Length: 280
Ligand code: C2E
Ligand code: MG
Ligand code: MG
Ligand code: MG
Image (cartoon, rainbow, N blue to C red):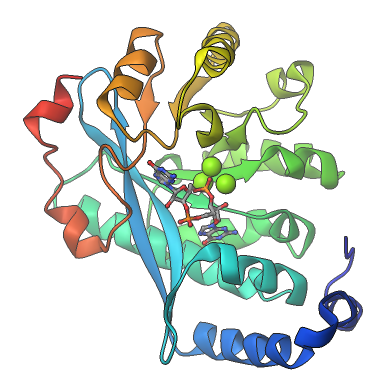
């Protein structure tokens, strides 16, 4: 794993990909251009209160609308953005776009909507993420407690000062969510002392839910509730999964069953979620 950004990481990436050197370089340059020329488009996926069926907010998920290749998913360009350090300017751009959009929704009268943004390890390691977030909040006039920063457990392992950063985010009023929970190795004693609001159960435990997964999910929910976290399940694809999660006390859900990630204009049409979804 590359430890620094800039030239070192750059050459590391090259040697790693060997034969794809040219592609990588081309990709890096066009990603740089994408950030500059607004080719990165946010899609938003509703987060639903499993009890009431109401949309409580959305998660911003970035897609690259490439002029010749079309829509490119984050699994393709986030790794390149990480390796080249472009994740930092990309992250700032995403943060600003998402906060601005959410503030616009507030101004349109949807006052309680939350917005979640994914932040990668490198953004935690580079520069001052708390300062960046605080500046973006000032600029967009979004109140801090509507912003949720989604980090993965790896942030807690990788970045020595991550606890301090999370504490500073908490002091700012921003909420923190632990994404893909259950796939890493977080120690509960560590989590307990951090201002983390949400545990987001990884979708691998939700999709094709089987007996073992059910027991894991039940255990995560129970443990999370005892520690006062709000539980979120991602990757809910059908009614049975939604029902199971609701029955076991999971607070919020996200997934194709409720809605795919979509453009802001289409989200607005979903502000009232379908009745049958409400009654899971
Ligand atoms: P994530 O934050 O865990 O996001 C959940 C992923 O699951 C998203 O994939 C979403 O589209 C997908 N998903 C949602 N509902 C379902 C479902 O019902 N079934 C299944 N199978 N999948 C579902 P996506 O948009 O391709 O994003 C993948 C990952 O890329 C995200 O995982 C996140 O870690 C990262 N990512 C996306 N946007 C950004 C960004 O702006 N910045 C950073 N640093 N990372 C991002
Ligand atoms: Mg996420
Ligand atoms: Mg996730
Ligand atoms: Mg993920």
